[in-house]
Length: 256
Image (cartoon, rainbow, N blue to C red; front, top):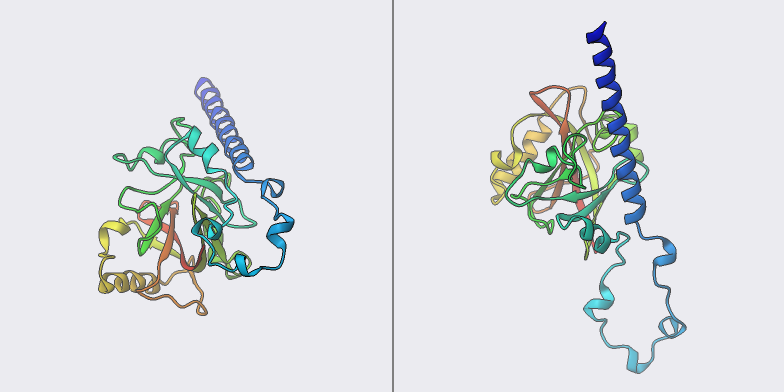
């Protein structure tokens, strides 16, 4: 009976902790998203028809996209936050962090530094923080309560993939739009250490390894073309099996 009661207490404590962390991330997302009212509205002078004096080429500052994430506020709380990932109409709406010199830190630490699950959404130091790599790999836990990357496996359903086809990555200066082309139950190899993405042969080898997967928890879109000159995004999470990972693959379609 004592063992049973202890187990119940531990279970309740674990559940309460996860609910608390879930609320923290939800509150962070609400604070980080810039509201429509905060977006500058054009002045009458800006909306007027151009004159001869105003037909000069736009400046770099004028071409900068409106970033809907308040990175100044986020980085004031944690300077290691460098991006934000969002999949519209899903639970995935999180900051992305990277700790130089400790790739496993955010595996077991939340974005505010608390130790333990659910960890954070993060990249390793092999990954460039400007999303210029051929394959940017982002990690997150598959939480049973659906937080972090807990809903990724739903992409094995063709209807779910069709309903949620895009991933948005925001940085302080850019907006990256990716189109999802595959959901794959993959092996547990370390992707960045297993392929030479600096060569076309290595890139093609990775694409082939994705296409060669055949199991029930995998789905491909035949209408999305991906090649060795594209830039791709890989979201990686656990799959309930130590020998497997679940990967969501997307190709860059637009950069602002």
